[in-house]
Amino acid sequence: DPSAAVPADEDAGSRAQVAPGEPLVVLSGVNKHFGDLHVLKDIDLTVHRGEVVIVIGPSGSGKSTLCRTINRLETYESGSISIDGKPLPEEGAELAKLRADVGMVFQSFNLFAHKTILENVTLGPIKVRKQSKAEAEKRAMELLARVGVDHQASKYPAQLSGGQQQRVAIARSLAMDPKVMLFDEPTSALDPEMITEVLDVMTSLAKEGMTMVVVTHEMGFANKAADRVVFMADGAILEQGTPQEFFNHPKTDRAKDFLGKIL
Ligand code: ADP
Ligand code: MG
Image (cartoon, rainbow, N blue to C red; front, top):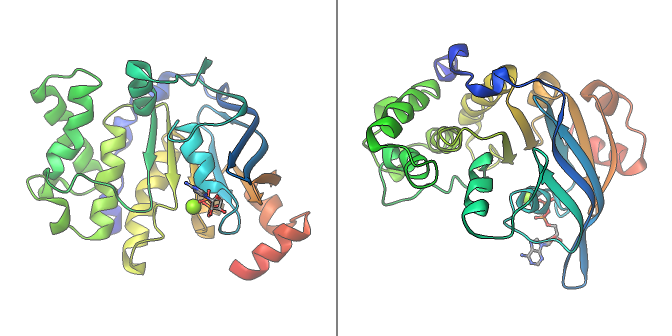
């Protein structure tokens, strides 16, 4: 029953108290190259508090690089990026704090294979957020229950299904109380029957007011959860709008062509 995996509303956390609508993630004129490849071209993107932005576009258009750059897993050459009014830090403790503030869920679940599910979720809060083990474990069990995998807490990642592992990965990010969550094709490595259980958790997070940037081609989810759809091709943002505007009335030929292939 996928609805068992839907987080409870009372756990919305501190974000619920924050005024929605202010700029939270701001990219301005961001450019990045991989060698000769101009992979991010003058990217301007503002994600507001509580907003859910879906990023779609053909393979190779720079969507993953955009996410990784926001999380400072990649560097960039020009332009600026700020999170909650502060420029991205370069290194050290501030960078660890940024990685906690900006949660990221990848296509491959990236859990620590030799740690239990519970340890996967408590590691960051203990190390970066300086929580006690008991405090971190209590919160971790609450989050694992929200995503419907609390019964697996003492198991290792390989003992879980892909959908369960991805829900653990979401709980692990949430344990850091992130200001924004980045999801990079979180369901594209999953068997079809497991996609819904992960999308249900994400839909629930969106409803609770989590600020989210989601790279996905799951159009049902985009229609239901997105405030805005951003279309990328060849490293540039070509158009953006509400899901209704974008899916029903794409403006550029690139977007029309892309939608023709995936819808
Ligand atoms: P998307 O996620 O939209 O499929 P990516 O951001 O993964 O696109 O990649 C954008 C482009 O950058 C692609 O042409 C890809 O081959 C290239 N690229 C991605 N990562 C690297 C890297 N680490 N080194 C060199 N080229 C890369
Ligand atoms: Mg990608």
